[in-house]
Length: 88
Image (cartoon, rainbow, N blue to C red; front, top):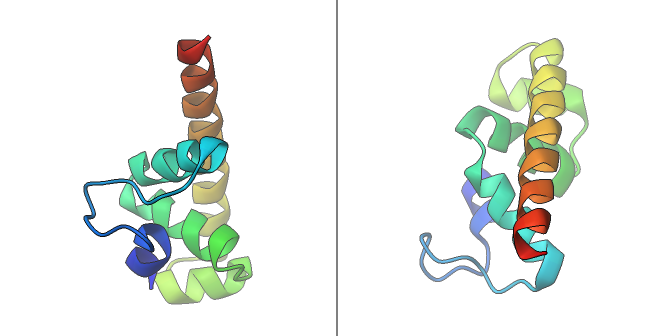
Protein backbone atom coordinates (compact mmCIF):
# COMPACT_ATOMS: atom_id res chain seq x y z
CA UNK A 1 0.00 0.00 0.00
CA UNK A 2 2.79 2.42 0.90
CA UNK A 3 4.56 2.03 -2.42
CA UNK A 4 1.31 2.30 -4.34
CA UNK A 5 0.38 5.55 -2.60
CA UNK A 6 3.82 7.05 -2.90
CA UNK A 7 4.58 5.99 -6.46
CA UNK A 8 1.17 6.08 -8.07
CA UNK A 9 1.36 7.53 -11.52
CA UNK A 10 5.06 6.83 -11.88
CA UNK A 11 5.92 4.42 -14.65
CA UNK A 12 9.49 4.11 -13.36
CA UNK A 13 10.09 4.32 -9.59
CA UNK A 14 13.25 6.32 -10.31
CA UNK A 15 11.27 8.92 -12.23
CA UNK A 16 8.96 11.30 -10.35
CA UNK A 17 5.25 11.00 -11.08
CA UNK A 18 3.57 13.63 -13.15
CA UNK A 19 2.67 16.22 -10.55
CA UNK A 20 3.09 19.93 -10.97
CA UNK A 21 4.68 22.70 -8.95
CA UNK A 22 4.61 22.40 -5.20
CA UNK A 23 2.97 18.97 -5.35
CA UNK A 24 6.01 17.60 -7.17
CA UNK A 25 8.34 19.22 -4.64
CA UNK A 26 6.37 17.74 -1.75
CA UNK A 27 6.21 14.31 -3.37
CA UNK A 28 9.95 14.28 -3.99
CA UNK A 29 10.62 15.50 -0.45
CA UNK A 30 8.51 12.65 0.96
CA UNK A 31 10.41 10.14 -1.19
CA UNK A 32 13.68 11.49 0.25
CA UNK A 33 12.64 10.62 3.82
CA UNK A 34 13.85 7.45 5.48
CA UNK A 35 11.54 4.49 5.01
CA UNK A 36 10.07 4.62 8.56
CA UNK A 37 9.26 8.33 8.34
CA UNK A 38 8.01 7.96 4.79
CA UNK A 39 5.62 5.19 5.83
CA UNK A 40 4.18 7.24 8.70
CA UNK A 41 3.65 10.30 6.48
CA UNK A 42 2.09 8.39 3.60
CA UNK A 43 -0.24 6.35 5.77
CA UNK A 44 -1.33 9.24 7.96
CA UNK A 45 -1.47 12.17 5.55
CA UNK A 46 -2.00 10.58 2.13
CA UNK A 47 -4.06 7.54 3.12
CA UNK A 48 -5.79 9.62 5.82
CA UNK A 49 -5.45 6.95 8.49
CA UNK A 50 -5.60 7.87 12.17
CA UNK A 51 -2.36 7.61 14.17
CA UNK A 52 -3.52 4.51 16.06
CA UNK A 53 -4.23 2.70 12.79
CA UNK A 54 -0.85 3.70 11.39
CA UNK A 55 0.75 2.35 14.57
CA UNK A 56 -1.11 -0.93 14.15
CA UNK A 57 -0.13 -1.30 10.50
CA UNK A 58 3.53 -0.50 11.21
CA UNK A 59 3.48 -2.58 14.41
CA UNK A 60 4.94 0.22 16.54
CA UNK A 61 3.61 2.20 19.52
CA UNK A 62 1.41 5.27 18.90
CA UNK A 63 4.14 7.47 20.42
CA UNK A 64 6.61 6.21 17.83
CA UNK A 65 4.25 7.18 15.01
CA UNK A 66 3.76 10.63 16.52
CA UNK A 67 7.52 11.06 16.85
CA UNK A 68 8.12 9.93 13.27
CA UNK A 69 5.46 12.33 12.00
CA UNK A 70 6.96 15.25 13.92
CA UNK A 71 10.47 14.49 12.68
CA UNK A 72 9.23 13.94 9.14
CA UNK A 73 7.37 17.28 9.15
CA UNK A 74 10.55 19.03 10.33
CA UNK A 75 12.62 17.32 7.63
CA UNK A 76 10.05 18.14 4.95
CA UNK A 77 9.89 21.78 6.04
CA UNK A 78 13.66 22.08 5.90
CA UNK A 79 13.94 20.38 2.52
CA UNK A 80 11.12 22.43 0.99
CA UNK A 81 12.55 25.64 2.44
CA UNK A 82 15.97 24.80 0.98
CA UNK A 83 14.45 24.08 -2.42
CA UNK A 84 12.60 27.41 -2.30
CA UNK A 85 15.86 29.26 -1.55
CA UNK A 86 17.68 27.39 -4.32
CA UNK A 87 15.07 28.50 -6.85
CA UNK A 88 15.27 32.15 -5.81
